[in-house]
Length: 69
Image 1 (cartoon, rainbow, N blue to C red):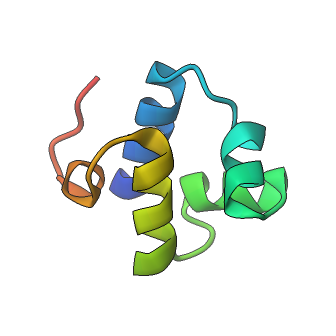
Image 2 (image 1 turned 135 degrees about the horizontal axis):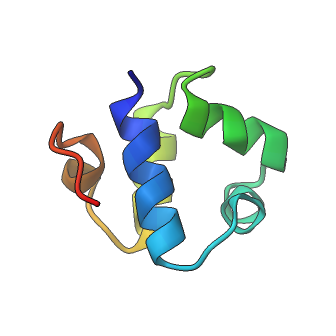
């Protein structure tokens, strides 16, 4: 189960952002970003910090095991 990817997806959708929006901010392609949400790739701390900054949340909120919906 990909808790971090699920949390990122929830925060992204709550903010009304597309995967393409986030991918552009990260300087990667949309398919590469989609793999981050699906757990096909591991997310580095640096990338996780950048995603949290884009989503205006904390890294702690993204790694918390309790999934907020």
